[in-house]
Image 1 (cartoon, one colour):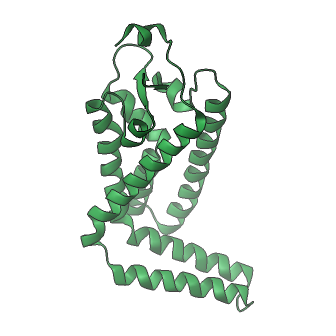
Image 2 (cartoon, rainbow, N blue to C red):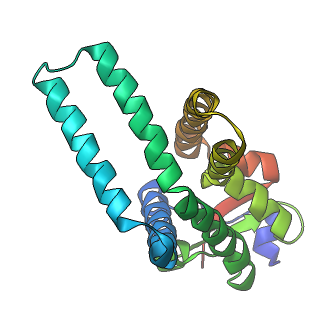
Image 3 (cartoon, helix red, strand yellow):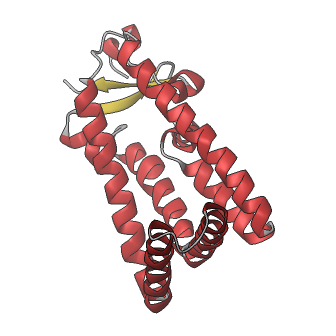
Length: 205
């Protein structure tokens, strides 16, 4: 760690650049996950579910079903889609660990998105380590939500899955929104996950 890092003198990146890096990283994770899982995904089933979704929306918009019927059909379809994308979700978890944990260890705290925009993750004490990156990824990059989703798909009933995932998704987005506000107003740009695991994102000189 450099003397500047020890003294905490690094400047925080522009918020817009940090957002762009986050978007690029998220896109790359989804793209790689879809690419790796493509040979194992039933494309015909995915097309059938997409057509079923279009049909439900059309029927509801044309008043061919009540709001209650629409909500029931939509929740059934949501569960079917989740089941059909279970393998993709597993790949997303694996790729996320490699991309957000393993890669920054070898790239000195950088993902590809952060490298493009000249920023990196550092530890506010000692050297950045895998434990910090893992727990950071749990909250910052939806890893925990994806793990919970897969586990509930595997071991819980349909109703338990739908109710619990709705709750966990709301919690995740609440944390994400709160983190965005914190990054904007905090002078060091610390998000919730940064405060919890003692990391921060800084400009690369």
